[in-house]
Amino acid sequence: MPELPEVETIKRGLELVLPGKTIEGVDINYAGSIKAPSCEEFARQLPGLTFTGAGRRGKYLLLCLDDNSLLVVHLRMTGRLFFCESEIETDKHIHLKIIFKDGSRLYFHDVRKFGTIWWLPVSRACEIRGLAALGPEPLSADFDVSYFNSKTDRRSTNIKALLLDQTFVAGLGNIYVDEALHKSGILPTRPAKSLTTPERKKLITSVQEVLLDAISWRGTTFNDYRDAAGMSGQFQNRLSVYQRHHKPCLSCGTFICRTVVAGRGTHFCPSCQS
Image (tube, rainbow, N blue to C red; front, top):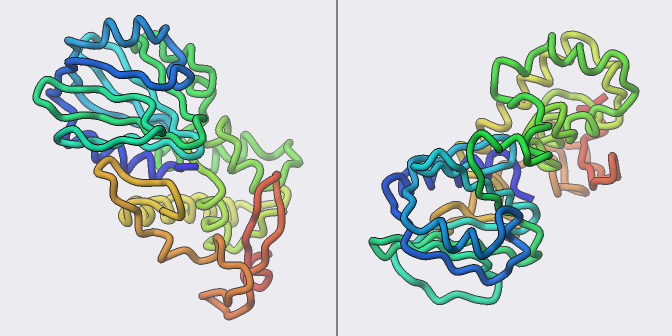
């Protein structure tokens, strides 16, 4: 599933091309992708509107329109949102095509069909339950030790499960949680409340550094993820532990282990993390 760095990379790409693009037509090939409004209303009322910008909240893309409404897109597992200057040959996995007056297109491609799209006024974005329930952005000043303490001191959950909880902090997923925990030297199975104040500070810093590094390399591509121009990310070449089990730790040489934590495949160094 695309995580914060991938969604941020797509957002930045769309920011460069979408503002000023006026919609001429909409083709919906899979109704299940459109969660609100009805497909008929979606296709009938979007033409004539103009995109003004792009944003992100957690793993949600927020595409702004000139009538003070939003297209909210969650890519889920295999969703891709990409822009092309002209018509391209498409396949059965293109579920939505937005055609602009200048002939360019915005495509939504989703092999697994789990991705979701809403069109609604900005004032009603809170109606999207997952979006409304998000915790702070991990790169914001709100994600600090004081916040961490307020949410963990009475919780027995392990630290990996906590970091994956989108109501605790928005946008993190399996890849970057494993990487941040390795960078901070913390085992993913540690109870969150057992972390000392120095460990919490180091973890917060590690989360932020890993995310910024991943964004600078345009995200991680193993299978489906592509940016807004259809290009792969490169951060997979810089991973320290994720999907590196049975390979030596880049810090100490100990072989990376794989286990299951919080229902997710989890990678860690048994020497560097405690």
